[in-house]
Structures are given as C-alpha cells and as structure tokens.
Image (cartoon, rainbow, N blue to C red; front, side, top):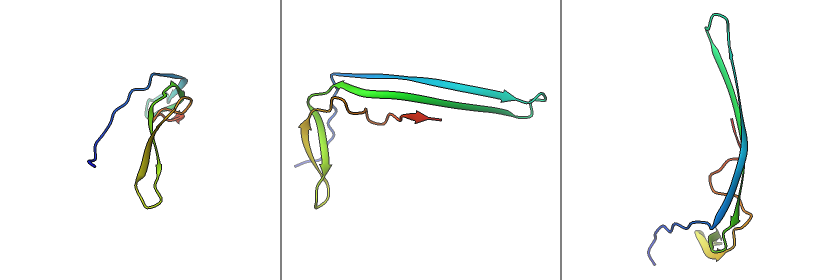
Length: 81
C-alpha cells in the first residue's frame, strides 16, 4: 500500500460570524493600541462521503468513509484575537 494524499470537496458548508476592532492613540501619537476579536461559526451542511479516521491501537490511523454533516470545518477557529 502506498502513502498519498486524497482531496475531497464537501457538498455544502455554512459559515457566519462577527468581527470588532477598537483603536486608541495618545494626543502626541507616541503609541497606538489596536484590539480586535473575531468569531466564526462553521459547519458542514452536507458531506455524506467524508474520509474519517480514528487512532489505531498499535499506532497510525484507521480510515473509513462516513457522514461528516454537522461537524466543524478543518482549521477554522471559533475565536481569533
């Protein structure tokens, strides 16, 4: 068996969120402060043949096809600041 990479596209996903930024400066502009916060809600709305995996007892992973509908998207944080 050879190692490789498989790329699959989900049938559908939905993302929405909010972002806020606050900036403050002194009168002499010797310093500038900036704060930001972002929230993202993300879910697969349809992904019936996703490639899923779980850790194998002896090491490595066991892969199988399954339904990932309702799960979160990969590498999308809830909050970012």
